[in-house]
Structures are given as structure tokens and as C-alpha cells.
Image (cartoon, rainbow, N blue to C red; front, top):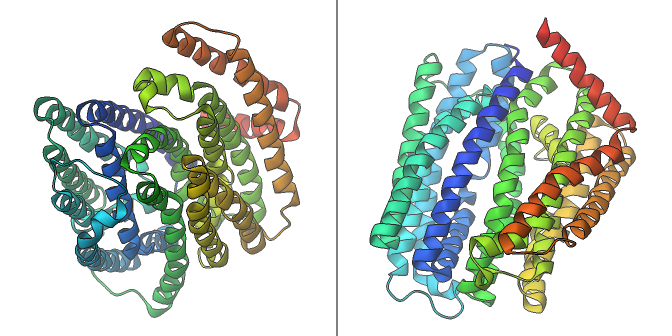
Amino acid sequence: MKLKRSGNAKRNVIAGVFSKAVTILLPFITQTVFIKMLGAEYNGLRGMFTSILQVLSLAELGFSSALVFSMYEPIANDDHEQICALLNLYKKLYKITGSIVFCAGLLVMPFLEKFIKGTYPSDINISIVYFIYLMNTVLSYWFFAYKVSLLNAFQRLDIISIVSLTAAAGTGILQIISLVCFRSFYIYLITLLLNTITNNLLTARFVDKMYPQYKCYGKVPAQTMASIKKKTMGLAMARVCGVTRNSFDNIFLSMFIGLAVTGIYNNYYHILMSVTGFMSIISSSLLAGVGNSIASETVQKNYEDMKKLDFIFMVISGWCSVCLVCLYQTFMELWLGKDYMFPSETAVLFSVYFYILCMGQIRAVYADGAGLWWENRYRIILEAVSNIILNYLFVQKWGVNGIILATAVSLFLFGFIGSAIVTFKYYFRQGTAVYFKSQFYYALVTAVNGMAVTGICGLFQGSIFKEFVVRVMICCTVSPLLFYLAYFKTEIYNQTKHWFAVRIKIRGR
């Protein structure tokens, strides 16, 4: 079965954008109420526990991505028996993973206070709070989580978006009511459990209705199992890298600075991840289609497609980075007030961090589609180790800025440069000079754009609300114009324009 990649990607993006808008807006409102009702220390505690459990979730090892990847070929060949066997394996592995996370989580419980510098809210029992977080993580593995693999493999992320939207909307409303009416952290946490259970049950219902032919039975052939094990080993390292990049930031901040600063950091990080979430809609919507394309198209065609998709993605990423630089501080002041703000240079570092996160994301989709997790093992280890070491050194020297800088440096050197070298060596099978040159040009254009727009924004003064509105207008008009002027005569712009025109013409027939 050859998937309708363009149609699926388009549907996934539309559903993803709508779902993401709601699932970002509601948690944003919830977070605002949470901070106003409970304070920064509770927010820091929430971030720290979430990070600890993300570390424990390494038990998943990334086998979910390896199994989804292994479904691409049997889907293309309509091999129902193989798909059922993979689904059966997935179900067993998730049950085991949930049990491992539960046991490991209980072992961590006696040492919770070691992760906190200074005091924590005196009106809660941190062991009870942690246990609720632990159960929320465990239930995410035990309640039909394996069924989402079919939606991912068949490129039906729109269904995942609809389910997430439904569960998040109900949960967000319950959380706001619990915070406003009871100011209870415990009731707030119970709603997290309800969200996880609802999300998994709804997903299972959709999968059973859409793909009734796929049941959990059969055994995966030895050759396929060996391939899955090898890819899982590579993915396990990638998960370790992801944890060191995200979760350890919170843990180091909590241990060396305290919960209050960790809470403020999480507010800034929440904004960054909200924007990143929109960008990931594009990359995640393309993944299954790219996997199918890699199985059915030539390497050269995929390379040409990658260049055009990468150009589009980096222009959007560049514009988002400029918006972050210009709007971060005014938005934070409007949202929470000056007491919950970091200095301006911290906001700039967050914006740079965001851009580096986006660099190479489209190329990474092709690496994942080609299953290059094992080939990435060494650069992943280097990124993880360097991030931990730099976090430890930089947080003591520069505090919050050190944490952001440590993550950005390790991500750029090993996450971007290292991963590009691996992808071009093992899949595209050509040099990286042209690719790095294009990325350097995109980054240079973004930097110049950001400085110009920031300078223009600085000319306007007034109340914080008026200043924010003016900055938004400048970012939405001047910045896109500058990007157009920088690119409209370039070869990649004209190639991409023609590429789009051809596809629109084909669909019009």
C-alpha cells in the first residue's frame, strides 16, 4: 500500500495546528491560574518531578519508534500478519516498561529532598505528590498505549490530534476549576491521571474502529526482531540524549539554585516549547510519509525533496525566532509581571536555543525515516555527556544562562553538525558542504532580520500593552518582508515555488 503522503501530511498539519492551538492555549491558561493560585515554588516542583520521571521513562528505550519504523515495509506490502505480530510485540513491551518505571520510581522516592536546594511548600507531602506523578507516567504505558503505533505508521496523526484535543480540553477545564475553587495541588494532580486514561481509551476506540483487521497475535520473525533490537539500541541512546537535553536542565536548576528560579525558568521554557510544538507538527506530520517515500522512491528524489522542505521549515523557524527575540520580555511582563522575569539576555539565549532546535529538523526526519538510529549512536553519546558536563560547569558559573548555553552548545555541535554528517554519509551518500552552506546562510539571514526588527521595535515606547501590540505588528509585517527580500532571487526559493506550483496543478486535475 503506497500511502497518500501529500494528502496525509496536509490533513495532519491542519488537524495538528488546530489541536496544538487549543492544547497550548488551555495549558497556558491553566499555568497562569496555577502560578497565581499556588506560586512559583509549586511550578518548580512540578517541573522537577516531571523531569525525574522523564529520566525513569528511559526504560522505554525508544522501541516504539523502532517498531513503527518496522511497520512501514509491511504496510507498503499489505502484510497483515507481520503488522499484527509487531503490534503484539509492542503490547508486551509496553507492559514490561510500565512495570520497570513503577519499580524504579519507588526506589527514587526516599531521596526526593536531595533534588531540592532550600525549602519547598510546607503544606504538601512531596512523597504523595511524586507518587501521583509516577502513577500518571505508569498508566500512560499500561492503558492501550501500544495502539497509537498504528496511527503513526499509517500517517493518521490527525486522529491523534483530535483525541489529544478532546482529552486536553476536558482536563484543562477541570484543572482550572480545581485551582480556582479549591486551590488544591492534589486535586490538580488527579486530573492528570484522568487525562492520561481518557486519552488512551479514546485512542484505542478509534484504532479498533479504523483498523479492526489488526489484532495482537503472532510472532515477529527472527530477522525482523534482530533489526528492531539494533535500532532500539540506537534509539535508546537518542532517548538518553533527549533526557539530558531537557530533564536534566530542571534537575540541575533545582539542585543548585532552587525551586523558585526553576519555576520561572519553566515559564520561559513553556513559551519556547509551545512554539516548538507548532514546528514539530510539520516534522511529525511528514515522518510516516517520508518513511514510505524512502521505501518506494530514489535517494536522489528524497534529497531534492528534503532541500525544499528544509528551506520552507527554516524560513518559518527563522521568523519564529525573530518573534521570540522581539516579544519574549514584553509578553512575560504582560503575562506574569516583572517579578517572574529574567534579564533580556536570557530571553535572547532562549530564542537562539529555539533556532538551534529547529536547525536540521527536516533532515532529521529523513534520518528517522531511514532508521539511522544505530549509526547515530556515537554522536548521541557525545551530545548527552557534553550536555551533562556543561550543565554542571555552566550552572555554577552563569546560573540560568549557563544551563541554556550548555544545552545550546552541545545541541549545535553534536545534535546538528554530528547528525548531519551521519545522515549524509549513510543515507544521502554525499558531502555535507552544500547543506552546511545553506544552513549558515539561513542562520545569517535570520540573525540580520532579528537585529533589524529588534532595532525597529526599540523605536516605539509606551504602555506595556501598546508596546506588545506594536511589536507584534512589526514582527508580522517587517520581518516577513525582510525574509522575502533575502530569498526571492535565490535558486532554492524558485525551485520551491515551482515545486509547489506543480503539486497544486496536479491536485487541481
